[in-house]
Image (cartoon, rainbow, N blue to C red; front, side):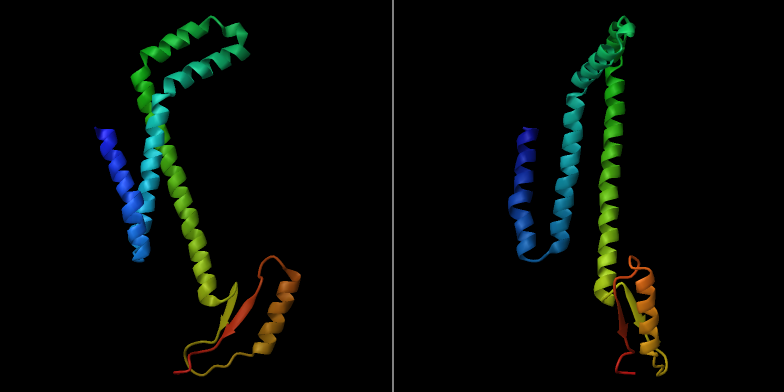
Length: 173
């Protein structure tokens, strides 16, 4: 029952709300829905991994003792320990996987924000470096000497600045 309700809600979000938000250019709703789907996917994968954890415990236990045959008598003891502490192990694994999913999600979000800010600055300024005249008074910059200095700097340090632009004070001043 719960599974069918969840599938209906996810289908409603994916097939009705997301296209609706995109068609009517409600980008805040669209990106909220994409983040919601991503978070639900991370939580679902975390719960799925929590279901197969006992099988992974046995597999890792077998691999470790396959490589280290001198400690073979400990295998039964460790298997009993896994069985005795199953609830605690599942809670710990669940906390760890949710924390890891949060770190990955927030890291990708911060990386996206950093790229977005960098691209926005480039769009607003028009280049890596923008030289602007001051907004007060009618101070006119010596463009030729600044251009020569920047060209020389770019020749000496080619990987620092790819381009530059000049902007003047607004014509209303």
